Image (cartoon, rainbow, N blue to C red; front, side, top):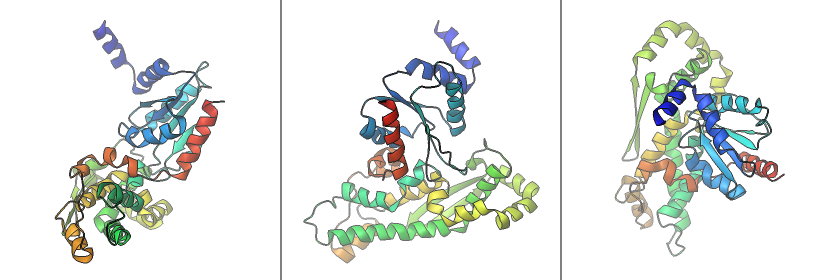
Length: 312
């Protein structure tokens, strides 16, 4: 029986498979959230539970397009079209989709929200012992560390290699309409912070070289004329690709460890030993930092409306 079921599932496309899963878990007593990424529940779970308690369930479908395709299937189904189901997707390089049952992040992705300086402030208070009011110059230490983060982050966003990476990726997505190509097939970014100096290495892949040869003239025009590129470069923290932002965040978190260059700098200036209580936190950023990420007002509003619909 198992092999027959497996064979049947393999014959269906992703939308049909997720539609079957939705059909299985749908409940008139709970709200259902369709979430695009497998890591996204790490961020959303506590946010949704704080508003809806236990009266919700979720399905991760592995992509924005899949989430929106599943929405079409559900909303066109005669028995499911009025279900209390909501869709949570990333903005990416697209215009934000705003609808009563769709939430789109205000930033490129959830990852960008992790990288806001408020996350660093919350993190060092919670994980570096800086909630202790007895620490002399506690607030000054917190302010100093956040300031160092903002300084390095500004240098990160001004780095020409990072600007090139986001410009090329935006061009491929919007002008060449290649939505399925992942960035690592074009350009690969490596980020390091050593002694508080930021270095970025950029590896150009074969697909990038092919794009450069065939699209050189059009790409130059795009760099000059694209209003979306200007908007993206004007708000890099919000609109640059989120996975690159996380690379930087991971490197900065390493500076919070005992005996790092930043820790020594804090000690020399304030006489306090900065120490991250969980040294492996940088390896599990999305899980470990979710509790410290500020919830956007637009998400609070969306979940509030979702609760009203669920209990109506």
